[in-house]
Image (cartoon, rainbow over all chains, first blue to last red; front, side, top):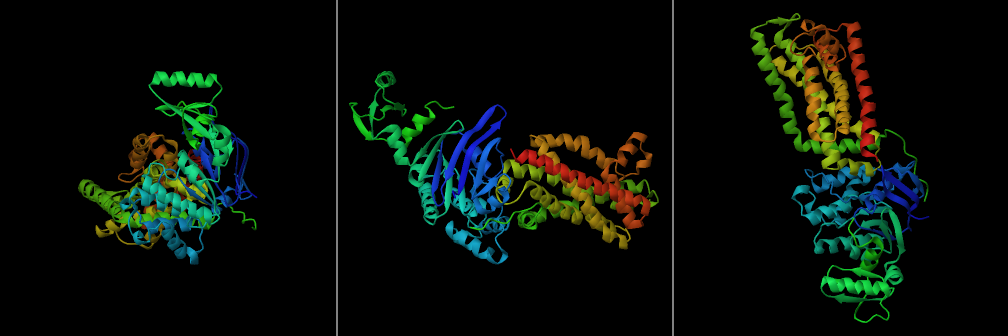
Length: 291
Length: 261
């Protein structure tokens, strides 16, 4: 039984179809990355999983429980780390964790130990009595993650876990997420950071306009859509445009990087070579224009 | 893995979780709310009690200080339930996104709303007594019936907290609370028999008073303090209970519409 399964899920807001016949699966014990640009439907998908949005069509199952009918039981088994920090800032670190130990129904006798364990996960044991508004951004994010783990969930939903953080802090959080995965917790993580998905996810689903446009391991996706190598051409905009037209005419897939043109799957194309990456696939599949 | 137990509605652990959050939070700001809850009625009591009290000695058979001291119980209930519910709820779902976090836990909107207003009604029941206690200092005679005032205040506070929650679920901007305060709460607060009897008001205002839960609260509190009138007081209590139940369901309905897409 997969930890999470979506079949043909549709969610509309008026004329906008935010999620459009989405299929998604998180096999037990794996980390699945939901990768897509802003507005692709990642956050709506996350809200569907906590029944804070109800799908218009399709089926959702979490740990074998159908949603929204049995969403409450499902929520008891899931840990949710939201994109936007909603900690209680006037409370201490320990108080924030204690409140969630109650909300997630940790039995009375286990509450203290659960809070201690969460403090350790967040590496905030020394800061237990510090008010949240006195914490650094990185500490707050660690606390936000630990808060979602206080009841030892079987499935964790991470919505953009490192958005807006320094590289050092991101690395620290990646180590934390990687450790959870190695402990056998199932993870669904939405992100628009390609490196994040590449490093942490066993499989990646790329979303665009509410649909899953590709699913696979990062390596397979790269090979399938961008080949092994790309050729990078630099130059003034007019030259880049010319190169792009020529490559396309010759049947190559291309992507812009801002300062250069990459010709993907570049077997037989002359020029400066580099290995392809997930970003190539991402831009290729989700489009070069900003919505 | 065995199938998890099916969870029902209005469960105690869910209500407890939300209440614990409120209680822990309250520990960090109880001083300021207790200050305003006690100082405000004292100011009213002094201003009206001694200001008007020098012009009129008795109203409806009561000393004016006794009249205002019991009447402002309703004011204190309104101020400690409807207003915190309007502003607090709005801030929690819109700015702090607290409700997002709570609804991601095994807590339903019905439980969230119920626990929040239960907590506010306990506060209103407590703070509602402040004017009466202040009035005792200024000459109101203690009576056994006063022991019922916290419970009456709690029932009314529940209704007004649900009213505030409903309003906060409907409005799109915090500025819109001004319309409700000016057009609904202030008039109701004035035609409740708090500072002057409603008999002197025009007919239409008396009709409004009859459907004004604050009026029934004022009457019931006065009768609790000075002596019950069973027939009339059952109606007053009935109105307060009906108002509380109706507003409770409305609050849940509109919060669900607001929070669940």
